[in-house]
Amino acid sequence: MPDVKIEASWKAALAEEFEKPYFQVLIDFLKKEKAAGKVIFPPGPLLFNAFELTPLAAVKVVILGQDPYHNPGEAMGLSFSVPKGVKTPPSLQNIYKELLADLLVPIPSHGDLSNWATQGVFLLNAMLSVEKSRAGSHQSSGWQHFTDAVIRTLSTEREHLVFMLWGNFAKKKAALIDGSKHLILEAAHPSPLAGGAFFNCKHFSKANAYLKEHGMGEIDWNV
Image 1 (cartoon, rainbow, N blue to C red):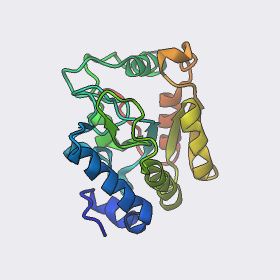
Image 2 (image 1 turned 60 degrees about the horizontal axis):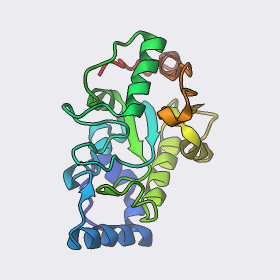
Image 3 (image 1 turned 180 degrees about the horizontal axis):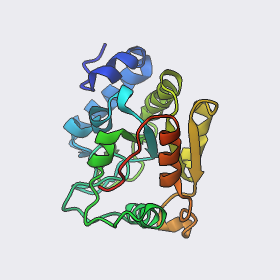
């Protein structure tokens, strides 16, 4: 098995995936890209940051993104999140606006969502890496096989999770989730390109109501 530096509970749950041929191809691809001098985001230690901050048994909510940010200093291994000191991206600005309207959560001055992750919000990108300045450059590398397996694992091994699927790409992942034992919330993508269709989805209050109903403990959406 490849020496994957990932949180222990996830490593155990995904052990079969690490043995599959596609995963070795993926590892080889990343090694070749780095050997060729290409800059990959997020930095290696943050590649599995979402898994590190939100162990399998701690997950309550899943927010699925597509690709990491491809500009320097932005990607931190959590979907939609950027480190403190980095300008809040437009999609996250719209997420904050919806939170203000939905739960009166004040719009924060930064875009670091680590506080969500440590409470059980699993901020998963479908692709876990990207080449600097080349959006979507790792979409055929094999990550999608891996993250689909992650979603299936969550659906199978856990109960009463909330899956927030924003945009057409994320909505397709509903096929991997057992809707009879989880809450699937779908909306337009928060990107400004969606023309504001994301607003008024009220996913955050709906998530907390569902979690409370099932004795899971609500999320404090302040960051």
